Image (cartoon, rainbow, N blue to C red; front, side):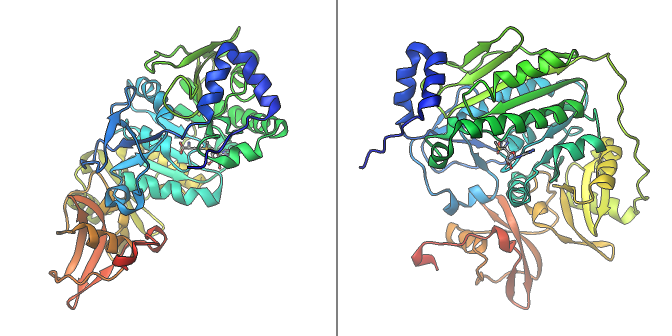
Length: 457
Ligand code: SAM
């Protein structure tokens, strides 16, 4: 096998040698190794992972894999049974878990695509919590929505807007905010060769400026008493500790948060003001990951949460549809938006209506279907939802049939007429409608598997 030598740019090598000292050599060696492969299973979807795995000690659903399998050809991947994720990034798990204690929480993942951290947060939500997963880049928004829809946790909303827009619409609205910032990606050198090719001191400066702006908005979006978690996949202090120092030097109601160090090998970084945590690839099995948390004090100003206008009255037929299609309907309220019927946590309805008024393109993940004449045409999200109530018959498929369904091919199967939920090993994948002895495939075109193995085409 051809060995590729990854050469760390000279300026970066000098910065890292200064901070790592005698550990610089093992770090440099670790950069030459293959990236670590990991996944996190969905605790709400039971599925036997078809490859050998070893547990990630710092996340109850995290696993290492020794080789990278072809995930695309495993229907479990498309059913949201697991998310492929760098184990180092799972280090924020316990911080998020602790942050979600107490009463209902509104959580914002401000830089969310493709959705790795959002799916991690979604699995921690209780029935009255809500997660808003936002991604500013329209071309990255769709994969975020797809991943969260497949993950299937209902109390999640997605949005594509700039942090400043969100800040002016709903200041002080969120109890927990994650800023997993766009960065120079020094921690991704093994996984994404382009990060190494594109690295420059100019890029670091540019990223740091962008991070400042995002963090300033995030701070304004945070409710009194709330927690801001900041993370990057880079190593330099300009994008990491300097960002925390800057906020703490400028804002009086911010305090750094000490985090229980559950991840063996993680390095704590202290400056005069801030505390941060770094996963180095030579110390923690994973890629490079930095995070820190800041708490906003409770009492400095009143919440400026905006009041929303009342929503239109819900028709009793909608409430009936909820009870028919989902298991958690008692804590949910029906919402019709752009002719689609959604289920949202009743306790968060005011806030969601305010969001929809400001950002009509906000999409609650729990879409039951298109609302046509007091009935629904089921939406793919309903088949994938962890609160799906079994309102249609299931059509369980074998591996090859499931892949054919996911590739949007015809299924030569006889079935009773009407809507059927397609399942693989009991997990929902999507819908077919049996009409006149044939099955119409309703798997979304933009989700389809494009390349099946030759013998299956
Ligand atoms: N949290 C994601 C996950 O775990 O899958 C990864 C997020 S990635 C590190 C950073 C994201 O920030 C990118 O999707 C990028 O499009 C977005 N971004 C870029 N510029 C931004 C800006 N000015 N404000 C907010 N987000 C931005």
